[in-house]
Every structure is written in C-alpha cells, then in structure tokens.
Length: 537
Image 1: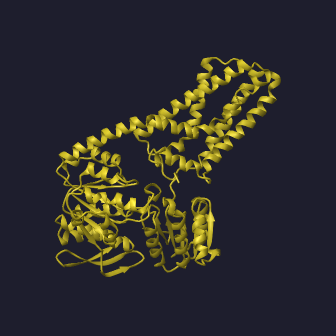
Image 2: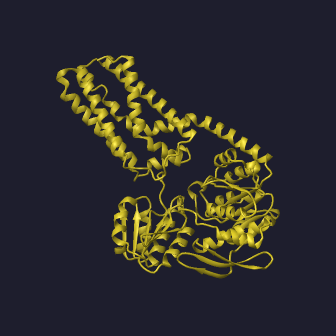
Image 3: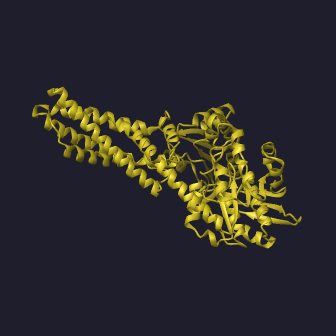
C-alpha cells in the first residue's frame, strides 16, 4: 500500500500533537533540572522511575494491539488493516494521555519564554522524526513488496514512545546555544542596569537558610530603606537578571540577591553580575554534593562570596574553622562571625525567644514565630548586617515584629486542631535535625512524613541512614517514609538504631500517606512534613 506525502505529513502532525500532550510533564522535569540534559538523563535512568515504565507499557500495549487488529482485518486487505491499526494506535495514545493526568507534577510547569521555545522545538523535531520514520517504513514496504509485510509495515512505529525522552534531549541540545546567548544578553543588560544603579548591593550565600535570611533582612531593612530582593528562590544569573530587568532597581536604595551554587564558579559568576557591597554567608553542609563531588569543592565555591564582596561579609559562627584555610589574610579581615544569641534562648512549640547583643553592648529581647535554633541564627545574622547599614535599635525591633516564617521552611500551620510543621523545602541534614527537635516540643502524638534527604551525592546513603537513626531516637509515634528512592537507607538507619519497626511504614506516594494520617491524627497532634522530593528526583 502506497501512502502519499500529504497523508504522511498529516499523520505525522496528528501523532506529534498526541506525543506532545502525552509527554508534556517530561518538559516540566527538564525545566526542574535547569534544562541540563545530564540531570534529566540521571532522573530518567533511575531504576525506580515510573515514567519509563509508563512509556514502555504504552508502547508495548500498542505494539501487540495494533498487530492483533491488523491480523484480524487482514482479509479485507492491507489498506483496511492499516486504517484500523491507526485507529487503535490513536485510541491507546488518547487513553494514555487521560490516565497519565493523575500523575501530576509537584512543581507546576512555569511557562516561560524558554519553555515555549523548547516546546516549539520539541514539536518540530518530533514531527520531522515521525515523518522520516513513516517515509522509511513506506520505502521498505516498496522494496520488500510482500503482502504479509504490507499488513504490519507500520508496526515498528508503535515503539516511538521509547524515543520521545531522547528527542526532547536532542531538541534541548540543539537550542541550547541560542538559549545561552539569550541568557547572556539578559545578564549583560542586568549588569549594565546594576552598574548605573546607586543601590547598596547585598549577596546571600549558603547551603541552607538563604531564602529565610533574605526575607528576614528584607523585612528589617525596609524599616529604613526602599528595598528590592530576588523573589522566591531566584538565585541563578538568569533569575537575578530577570529581577533586575523587571523591577525598578535604579530607584531603590538596597538590592538583595540570593546566590545559589551547584558548581565551583557559580557564586563568582553571580558576584561579577551583582558586585555585592555586603554579604551574608549563612553556613555550609553536604548539600549538592552530587554536583560539587567533594565538600572541599563546596566550601571553595561558597567562599567565592568573600572574594567577590567589597566590604563586610557577615558569616555564621560555625563557618570560621571551615572557611579560614581557603581565604587569604585580606579576605579574612572582611569576615565578621556571628554566633547568634548566647543567652536567654527559649524554644517553644509556636515561637522562639532570645536575647541579642548589639555592637554597642546593648541587649535587645527578640521574639519570633519562626522556630528553632536556625531562627536564632538567621535573625542574628540579619540584625548584624542591619546594624552595619545604620538601623537603630528601635528600627530593628520594629522589623523583628514583622518577620514571618518563610513558606515550607519549618512553617507552623494549625488546621482543625492539628499542628503541621511544613518543612518541605528544606533538604539537608542540619535542617532535618532542627525540624525533628521542633516536632519533639509538642505534647501529643508526633508523626514524621519524609522521602529522605536528596542531592547528597556519594554521601546520600550515609546521610539518610543518619536520618533514620535520628528518627529512631526521637521517640516518635509514627514514621511514614515516601517512595523508593531513598527510604531503604532511612529504614536501615532506623532499624540499626533500634527504632520500633511497627511504627515505621513505607508508602509509594504522599497521596497514599494522606489516608494514614487521617486515621492517626487527632486534635493536638503534630505532623512534620520533612522535605518533599522534586519531580526531577
């Protein structure tokens, strides 16, 4: 049977539309991976990744179903068999799209201009490949010229779903040079804006606590100055540039930039863009070891903030021994180490109180709805820099009263008499210990829901075993582990520390955990949601 060019083009376009809808979430995963193919491929190759399993089920089901339908209609000729085979193909593809809807992304797709360009490119590449494969199969049918082969000539096309993730990566690779050039253009534009602006620029760096410190500092400095900060977790050159290019930085007095890093050189690149006058260096822990490879590289990368800041860098007190070997004498002179409150610290289930000693020796009483020792440290770091930027005691106290917990970072929520500690966006061993300590301050049942600690690289197994030990020693009423990626290490650590295995339960998804919580929780009980695995993990 000969299929003309027009029919092949129409079929390719129709199938491409189905493929795009069916694999739309994979574009969201690639976005979460920072549009890095290597990270996307690591996610794709994880042995417990159900995405490939679903694609496999879709392809194999279509293969056998189309083969069966083609055989059934073979007495009516190859043309009828192919038409009904195509109808079967479409039905299975539509069914897959409908069923796959229930696997929603935790992090919704951000439909940026880059995402739109990726979508257009992916559609174009997929359509071209579809057309080429269909044309090749038609050509082979002509060469082979066999009645039986004619019936099944398009059967290999049913396996196309296997190729779709790789076509997405090919598309991403093709448009990557343009995206890099486009990002460079926006970053250079933001750099020119910042160079003209008279604003005092502040960088926030650390393995943890960056967003919290940024929000606290913004609240304090707003008592005296007009302040702009990078929103949410915008902490890459592109994120900082977007903030600068979209907001009126020229008219502000203070610009605060959160600075993230996954590799050596990332902070230096951000410093070159922002040129910070001051900085806060919160702390370091084994976060992003997967990309840094070693803790030495991590510390070296974070210390780029000291090298790139003109004036004072306010540092967490625990950093002194870690970063001193990396810094020159002149760089050490920039650093001011703040140990937080040394007296009057009181941790309660719904607030934290402590005494802060100012530079002039005057003491101020601080009370906040933020929880734990991290709140003490983060607020102390922000106050220390606010003092150096000229805020008075009265302005600082006024700002402290307005500080609110950052969503999903040890945020206390009360719902129907149940206390929820939402620590979904914290993902390191230090934050985990802090969160568990906060949970222990509640009186009634205490429950932890967690998938484990991610992005620990070669330390991931060790970190999660230690998390299991921590949970075993916390005397909790229930531990619910989510998923399959990390929970084996957490469970092993829990068992090694003689945790009560009857109190530990593993469920595949957070949705499956919700009915369990509904049965367990009563008024006055507390549940800690410790970390939330991103879709790209």
